[in-house]
Length: 167
Image (cartoon, rainbow, N blue to C red):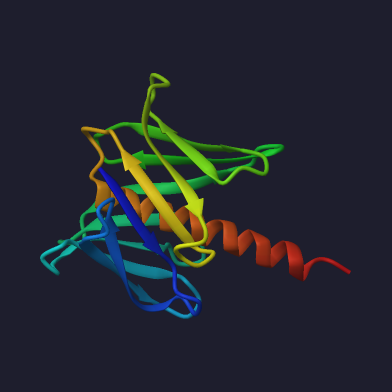
């Protein structure tokens, strides 16, 4: 299944998730102007999961509709690439990797098997738009939407820090 979704310019408000047939498949409720929280809702409009940065932390936490922890996304320093680790509660640890200057990411399990991939797309959407292709039996597509938005928000935070430190 493919899902398409995007960020809002001000990181606040509701954006639609659509499938490969351009049919509604849920939505993102972006909760903050600073990009620190979001809810993912299913096609029925009910909450599926939420994502947010932990207080005073760069770790992105994903919880289910009952606020139970699903997993934590952590950025890993990596020269000339983008690397993240997603540690789930009882469903394994996944690596999220993108080569330098690429807009494509792979998600692999602990055995190195590709379970999903996503890419930052442009054109049909705005700059913060993504296409998810999920082949995992253990990770829900809506959970991965929250993970991807965590990757996106972490990348934006790091870009802002980098630009703020430039002379």
